[in-house]
Amino acid sequence: MPLSERLRSFLDSKQAQYTLTTHPKAYTAREVAVAEHLPPKEVAKTVVVYGDGAYQMIVVPASKLVDLHEARPTLGLSQLRLATEDELGKLFPDCELGAMPPFGPLYGFPVYLDSSLAGQDTIAFNAGTHNEVVHMKTPEFRRLISPHIVSLVREPVGHYSG
Image 1 (cartoon, rainbow, N blue to C red):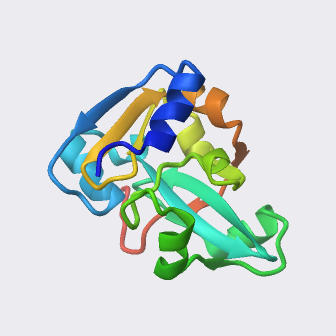
Image 2: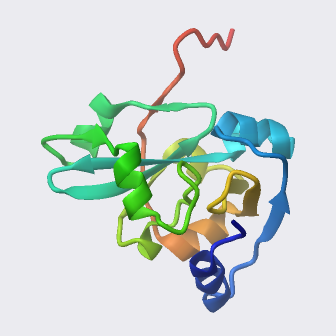
Image 3: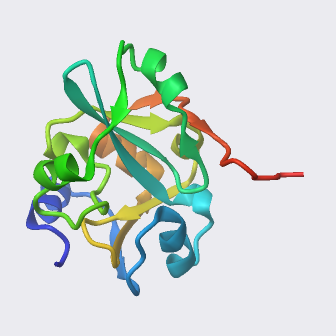
């Protein structure tokens, strides 16, 4: 499955400046970082959550995990859970499961960009497949999406930064 027509049309209609690269199949954001020879802090992981009757898109660095306990009050929700694989398949029919780009407006969802990723010079993310990645300047991504900038992540368990 190539870059979705929906994503390509959106990027082209906004005259977005981006590059598209292809690599061997990579199923996690950390694997994408390795395949693309990028630091995990520059690779965006798209996490879809469901809370209070609506879906939201949370975008965090590959090197971090979403803290749902922190995200619930930050997003102003009384309930919050991860979207199921079945839900993801229905919400993103033009994407391979788990490879959705962090472009909530294309799917009618608000986007919450973690502050640690918002401060990076560049951002890279799945283009709807497990082997294509869009690269762009983070300010360009922010221009296109107008995400809410929030702090939602924590270090993975067992991570030592000493």
